[in-house]
Image (cartoon, rainbow, N blue to C red):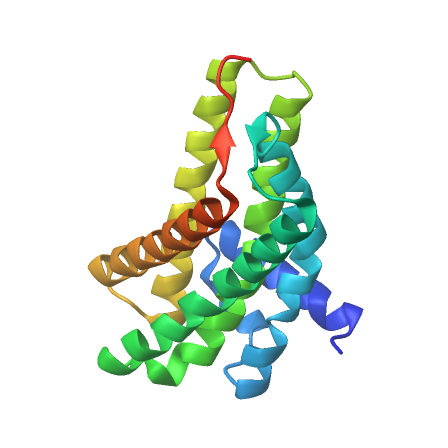
Length: 196
């Protein structure tokens, strides 16, 4: 069980990294324990993710029952948290960056909590009618771009990756996320209702 102090320290480190402060990485230990304990971030982010998912699926038709939908989303959430670290381990080995792997994943996992929080904030504003459809799309694009840059910065600092290497890691993460989302949507038979 992770302590509130450790979670707060890790989130603060992620916040420092989000401000492009390379010293934020010092808040993450480069140990197996830090690696595994960072997955508590998935537990902390779960309620935020559930709300975000509910907002985003408003106006969508799901061709399955609620129990099955809950099962699919739950499995997708777990896979989403596991598949990137699994893939990155082999990338780290191939690029001789495995000695910093635990530190990188710890920072990456805690950063996801901030990313989901930011996406939820923008989605909530749009759902509440504070943003016009066009402004909502524009802000979402800006937020997604900021998240991708943030992820690249973490890879650069934590793994000492070159710029092309950091970009490659970001695109790997993006591709895996799209694959997991696509798998979930296919299982749900999800169809979005456009234009009312």
